[in-house]
Length: 255
Image (cartoon, rainbow, N blue to C red):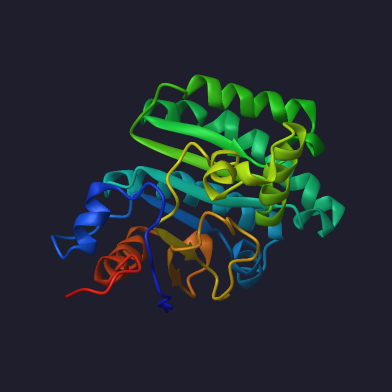
């Protein structure tokens, strides 16, 4: 199930994306953003605790990174834990924090060896020192990798992102006339990456849920009923094929 939205020029579009907009060849999105939804429902369908769904979701993420990289995607940004997720039951939140540590220990060497660069975006002030150190280790060990950049949004919200950029402007005593879209863009959590070309949400919900509100302004949207742990190569190829068929005019009218 996919939904088409109007598109326009996205910051940092790749030559391949622009070529597709001009009608040349097949488009491959340079940057894909994913809301990984459906872990809890996947577990419930199997009469298992929600934690097992989250664990299966981590395994799926590792496979997904490799598949997107093999298709030529340069940046993958995933929504792992939103700023609203703190409202979940404390035992589930605690389990998720522990799962992150386990996942780093289990998969970091593989991801590093596969050429994946890991970046963490979001507010780190609310997580434990142990978790922050694990993130810093992951970022440090993969800093020189170039095959694909995996950005994990943890304790992240799109509104938080805009606010933190504005706070930087206030802290720097920026004059009103100096504050524009370009300045804010350079101070967003994903300033190191081009804006997403393709925004995917699994699990059947059709909303963006406060994820990359600024960056996804012109992303193509793709929604699927597939629950995240079941999201595999076939679903990825379906999303990429749908994207390739989109007419990305970037605000212009074709002659």
